[in-house]
Length: 116
Image (cartoon, rainbow, N blue to C red; front, side, top):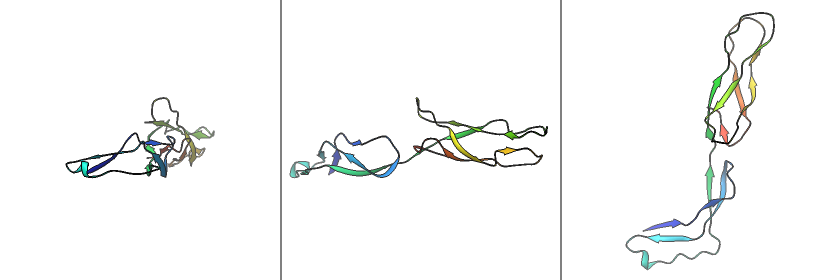
């Protein structure tokens, strides 16, 4: 026997845990379905929407020393069509002195997406 929710809907598109999902009722399937009736007054389920992982493409990562501060940034790729997501914060992405450094993206502008 199977029980299927009809027309399930989240209240919004935002990623979060334990979100309410309203349904328009349930259907019962299987060989013994006619032996059962689903009765509920407020069909509400709980479910999670997890953030979508995106990829980053880093800007220029090699500079010649000239005494001025150099900055490397990243472009977010893999967001849904029509949505703009940017890197909100970085660590260690601005340097002046010669050396090897590791820049890191630490937050995105949209909580529906996560860093790789």
